[in-house]
Structure formats: C-alpha cells, structure tokens
Image (cartoon, rainbow, N blue to C red; front, top):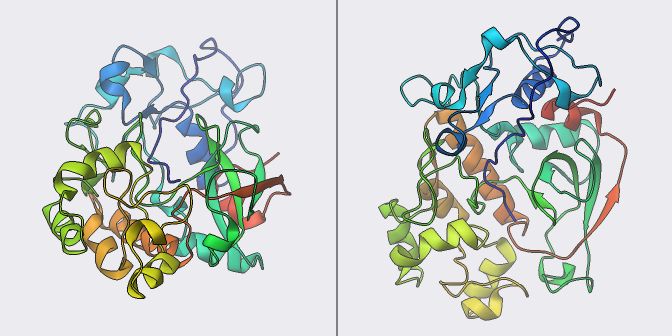
Length: 334
C-alpha cells in the first residue's frame, strides 16, 4: 500500500503567550514540527476558515511540552484559504502548505543511502499506522498466514523494512512510496471525478487518465479500458501495482490474474499492474519540480524491483530508533 501525501495534523493552538520558540539546530526536525501547523494541500476548500501558522511564523511550545501544543502568535496566523491560494504558493516554496517530502519516499536515493550508512540490510521508510504512537519506529517483516494478503513466498524479493510512523489515518501499515492510492486526502493530482482537485497539485503528470502517454502504455500491455479504469484504480485500489516477480511470471506466459500475488488484483477494474518499470515509471510521474520527478521515479523503480508495491502479509515489531532514518525524517526522539 502506498500512501499519497495526506494532511499533516493541524491541532487547535494553545494561547498566544508562552515560552520561547524551541531551539532549531537541525533543519529536518524544524521542518517536521512546523508541519503540525501547516495546512495540508487538500484543506483550502474544506477548511478555508481555519486559521493556523504559516511556515515563516515563530512557533512556541505549549504548556504540555508536546509537539501538538506548538502555536504561534495570533497576529501571525492566516486562514488555510489564504495560505493555500494557488496564486501565492507552489511546491518549491510552500509558504505553509503541507506536502510530504519526496525525499522520504521508499527507495529514494537518500533513504537507500541512510539504510546503508546505518548498516541495515533492509530498506528504510516512513509509514502511516494508527495502532502505535506517532514517532514510533517499527520493523516490518514479510510473513505468511496471518492475513488474506500476499504471503512472503509470493513476493520473494521483498526485504524487511525499518520505518518511522509519521502520519495518521491508517489501520494497516501504509508505506509512503510513489504511485500509491490517492485516497480521501489527495495533494498529488486530479483524478477525473474520483477525487477533489488539490488547490496546488504536487504533480503535473500522475498515473491518471489525463496522462495519455501512460494510458497508451497500459493499453499496449493489455489494459484496453485503462482510460476509463485508471482514475478509480489510482484513487481507491491502492494505486499502480506490479513487481519483478510478477513481471517474470507474465514473461513466462502467465496471465495477469494468475501472476498477481493473493489479495491483489491486476484485472483492470480491481487493479492495474505494470510489467516494465523502466518505461512505466518514467511515463507515470512528472512533478511540478524536477526533484519530485526524480524521487518519484526512483521510488517507483525500487518498489517494482523488490516486490513492494502489493498488499502483503507482514509482521510488525517496535524497534529502536535508527539514527539516519530519524535524522532524515526529521522526527528525532528526545
């Protein structure tokens, strides 16, 4: 499962007086803490009258000494409608709008380098998972028999993951990677009538019906109705699937559905699966900024190469904080 950027939590602020702003000795933690006050890229229409702290506000600590208590002076607050006005922000200079950083996508060169530097023989990720507190680090290991989803034998290339819980609203482990389902809080791209159009989309091209080059590619591998199916699939069916083991099965003459791991669909309406990451990933994603494009393609190729873009049976265990994962994510434990 592959989350699209979801809204950063934006709690009600504490009173407008209080202690000095928290020290900021590292840009990443400061960015993370500011995100608690940001308006998500989906909130302008639904929460236009909500007032919160823009990115350049001086954040202060509330009495409970918890990140959820951060606040700014009343005079610095702006409405989400103003903060998220398309005429005043863009992904390169968000000004208080919240997107997930593409650096944190599974398989980005930064995340791969962090795992290598820590000597970890799996992959690093950030995830949404409501069964444990925000900030918790977990190890996600391929398993078998505990769910209706793909057992480890069906995704043999999938590594274990160490991940930090970085967001809310998922009852199962939801890994941040390219090509995930847009879901209810969509900051990525319009997808026909399936989802609200973000005020300022993070992508200029995504895996949707509007991306005619990607639709043509899918039609060339047998999805004749891709143009009418894609928006629903990418919004509500977990996004674009596929992996190296699946592709090898197809190449040996297997059918799409026979080659799909259990609990996953590749039949069009219930899921669309790519067979060639080099071609498909480059066609599917183009960010508003070139850096986003690079990270999305890196993530798409990595998830494909390691059988990670499927609903999988996994075991979850709480682990110690991996130093370079928490440094990169910016949520460093006290």
